[in-house]
Image (cartoon, rainbow, N blue to C red):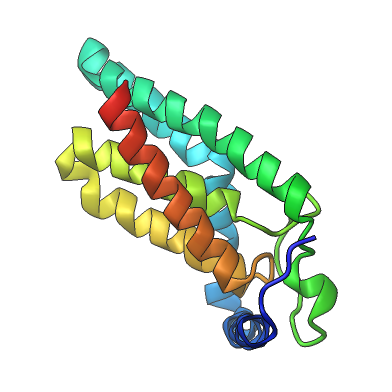
Length: 174
């Protein structure tokens, strides 16, 4: 079972409550629900297909790096979720309301953030002009997770760190 030291857990709980309060604003909540849904994979698969359609073989190195980071990312976050068994904040923090749809039962780490960070770093490496758009989208996905009550801020930070490591590893090794 996942357990932060008491002081860090208290801080994580407070930050989860504060960020989740933003979901009371309908327009922001709706925007973040869309970003979260697109972050399920829809946006990344669509972008990969568009890049291949536009650039053909020139896009293959980026797509290969995304595939490696994506497969390893799924394996890592599933393994971590099975071993940490950290409940989602809306299940244990009374002031956090679920404003989104969780894909699974456990919280740590944020798989959405992991993949958004890894894919955006890879795409910006290969296609620098895409940087602002993919970084902006990755930020929306990351912010959506605690605002919608689906993750603690520490889950998002861990997902971002793992995603950055995966992107660097995929680019360096493949």
